[in-house]
Length: 402
Ligand SMILES: Cc1ncc(COP(=O)(O)O)c(C=O)c1O
Image (cartoon, rainbow, N blue to C red; front, side, top):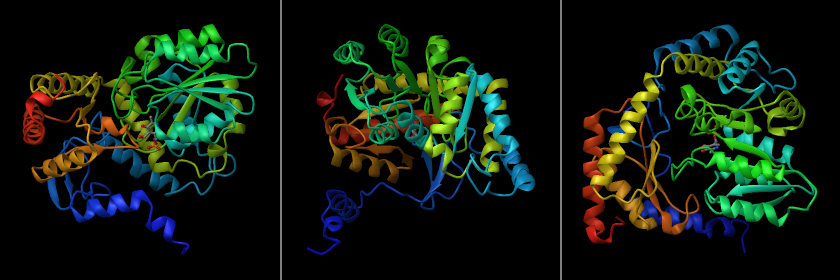
């Protein structure tokens, strides 16, 4: 067997080839404009319902100006890790602003949100410890767990009785217990039942860590995330997240009390041994934060659009499960059909993300439709009408889950 055979024969490569041959391959499409309510993809302007630009800040003049000024002052890179030569005063300013915004004692910022999870989780739970994760947690949480030698116990999605059973299983065991959940689930779009999770944590003396990647800017006071949404910030030990969605930039953060954050400063390997957030990105997050704190209209528009889209989709009898946030899963429940519908929609000028296994369970293959504050009612109406017609051309009305 040649050394390349395992690559050529991998199911991933075979599926990608088949999708390319049938003109349904949906990945790595080239974008040549800012992403707003419309975007230019492969040379054609389309309605953008597949971004994470929830507040529509991606092309905001004040954020762009802040990034440009930071490049003029600091250059394009920090040239090293926070630990050594890569801490600039803007990083400290951002950490300071964020701790106030999130109502926590301290914050550290990471190069990406993915690195938050691969850095924080192995540092918080190791040999003899236990990690409890929701079965639908993001890949970066799964990978963070894989990097830890702690025992991992998966509980059913948002099922607090199952979490309680899993906690009970190790009730008398020594070792740290760490419960981790997405704040808003990245594909199914529902909100974690964090109030109930923290109650279980208290009963079992467990740490709680909520990843607010999709909740930041979207729920909670001025968009402070899921803990703030439930009014339980003081009961959540760690709040993590990313700047790559509502904050119109890149990077990640974790917030907690002084002791834990100081520990993570010296124990979180992806924080210590990776180049720090570039000046332009740091400055753009600071500018976005300023806008979010002073102007709730972005979030209000996002929620107006979300409620409108949810209502229209339910009127069209689309299968959207428990959708309740700007991430709306439209379940197709068949991978190939999901790719086909996404391609047909793109041809009609509407961009949505097809999501199949392993991103979701095979039977939960879905179109991920996401809103921004910048969408207009007409754009939402047109997109949903087209989505409904396209799906119904493939799936008879009576087979749609009502
Ligand atoms: C829940 C969650 N955590 C972390 C990440 C990774 O964030 P980043 O893009 O900053 O690496 C994502 C990205 O989609 C996410 O959905």
